Image (cartoon, rainbow, N blue to C red; front, side, top):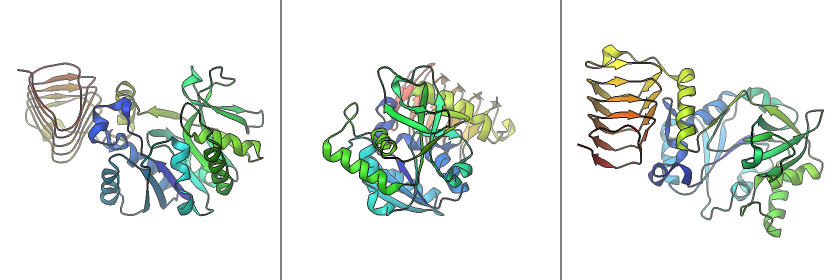
Length: 329
C-alpha cells in the first residue's frame, strides 16, 4: 500500500505564512502538520509515500529528506493546480495498481489507522458537522456503507462530512474515474474533485465503508490553527521547565523547540515555539511562533508569527509571515 499526500495547495487562507512556508510545515504542538500525518501512517506500517507538491515544493522535499529519512518518498509536481482530483490523477504511474491511502496535507484526525489500513473494505473517514455545505458529504446506508458522496452540496442530505482520509483498494477504478472526469471536464466548484471520482466508483459498484474519526483538527485558517495547536499540545507537548530559562515562567501546555533562548518572559499556556528562537521581556500565550525569530518587549495573544521574524515593541494579536521585521516601539 502506498500513501498519497497532496501538499501542492497555496494555502491562501493562511497567508501571509503560506507565501514563504507550505501550510503543511507550519509548526504545530512541537511538530508539523505533515510530520503528524507521516508518523500516523508509518506507525500503521506504510513505508512508501507519494507527495504531490507545487508551490514551495522544494521545502517539502528538504523537510522530508531531513526529518523522515526512513520512508521511501516520491514527489509529483502539480504545476497547474486544478483540484485534489487532478493532484491524485498525477500519481497513477507511481501507484501502479497498488492500494492507496490518501490523506489531505492539511488534515489531522485521530482514528485507529492500523484498523483502517487492514480493513477488507475501502474506507472513507467522516465526522458529523453542523453545516456540511462547506465539505464533501457522505450519505451512509444503515449497513455503514456509503451510497453517495457530493462536494459542498447546496442542500445537504447528510451532515457527515468527509475529513480528507481515504483508504482505496480499487485504485485502478479510481484512476479510471479520475481520467473519465478529466476527459469530460467534470468539475465541482471550478476544480476536478476527488469526491466526484469517489462517487463515480460507488455508482460503478465499489463498496466504501464509513469510519468515524475521534477528532478532526482544522489547520486551514489562523483561528482554527490556534485552536488545533491548543488541543494537540495537550497530547504531544513535552513539559517545558521554567528553570531552563532565565527569570522566566512557563505555564503549560507549551512546546519549546531546541536552541531557544528565553529570558525575563512569561510563556503559555498553549504556545508552540520553533527552534532557535529568542524571546526577551515578552509575554506570549495562545500563539505559534516560528523558528529563528527574535521577539523583544512583546505581549502576544492569539497570534501566529512566522519564521525569521524580528518583533520589537508591544502588541496583542498578530498574524505575521516569515522574514518580517516590525518595530512597535
